Amino acid sequence: MSKALAAAPNRTSTSFTLSWGMVSIPCSVYVGIEPTGLARKEFVKDTDHPVGRVQIDKTDGTVIDRADVIKKAEATNGAWVELDDDEIAAVTTERRLASVVGFVPVKNLPEYETEGLLQVRPKRVKGKVDPGGNKALSLLYAALAAEKCAALIHLALRGPARYALLDASGDLRWVVTADAIRQPVELPDASVSDAELDLARKLIKAEGKSVPVLVDDTAATIQAYVDSKAAGQPVVTATEPEQSGADLIQQLMASIAGHKAEGAA
Image (cartoon, rainbow, N blue to C red; front, side, top):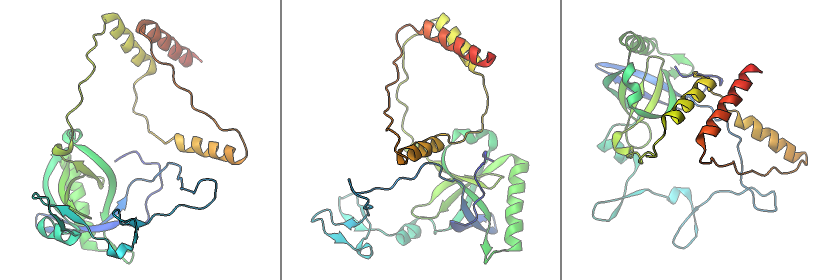
């Protein structure tokens, strides 16, 4: 279970049926992430007129009604053909249908790159939970916890089906497939001396190792600044950070001394 400080979601975002062997489990999905950043809107310069969004014909610039917009995909011969969500579902996986395709040990989960966070819970119909579906999903989660693994599922919500990992706490994260992960750029190859390495390790120890619960500390700062601007306070300009010089030894020693001083205060 991820560290959670935001309020629990109270509205479902979608639903799907999870196929586990011969068991079909109706599930509701809740968005597990609460945006914390400060929302901004666009306005026409020197006015208070909000800027809207329209669909336009990129060839002649005319405004197009949303109902007249279709999606096309490029064939290997260069032709563009219409392709809608129903066709994608027909040739891949039916929408809102998930199949358990395997189980991944919890210790191996870090080997997968994931994104997003959804909460999978028993499906509710008019606020009521189906007893059979509730028990089936509870049994799956109990089995995952006992076996220390997560279910690897193949799920189509909107668009093509994707792989996802569903753990014993009901958290679902989308898996980024290996063919979408780029090869890493080469790391810096500058050599470091034993003395520099020793000081770098001491700096890590001075700062300390921990597993902090992370909260967004920028949104409140930005909001306070926005409030100050609204009250007529002056605009703050960013300053360029001082660049590191060639003398790493002195910089590391100064950093260590600074952290020790903070710890003593």
